[in-house]
Amino acid sequence: EINKRNVWIVQLDANKDFSEAEKCGRLRQVFPGKPGRYDSNKFVSYVREKFELNYEPGDYILVVGDPTLAAIVTAIALEFDGEVTFLRWDREKYTYRPFSVCFYGAEDVSVESKADDSDEEENEDLKFNR
Image (tube, rainbow, N blue to C red; front, side, top):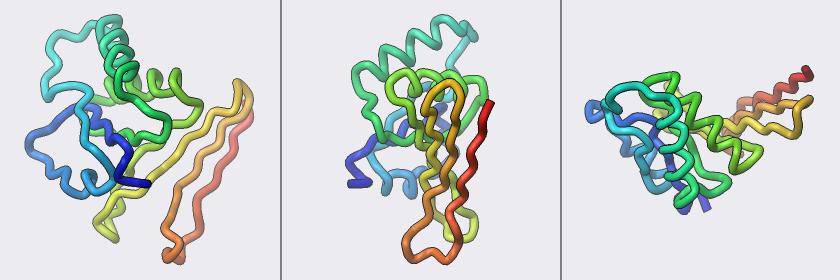
């Protein structure tokens, strides 16, 4: 069920309203608004420890904040599961939509945007081969 998932907010922003994201699951902060001095090794260890305790395959990642931190969170999520599901803001419907990136192996990457059954738009499917 959708709201049993965790929604991992990469970097908390007190100026943003996350009420729509909360409809998708339990909100969890990865990094505070200002994580302090940048030490990539400490950040990687920090996210691994946090995810070892609480990350479940199928959880959502909400990319807010520093793109470098988002990359670290995504990479660590991939260590736990070969698929990462992001929440993307739909500006027309004012809601979040899941957007999954599946890594089947070193050679195939699949990207899928999941639309509602009631949505008339087609799902975006892209396949990349290295």
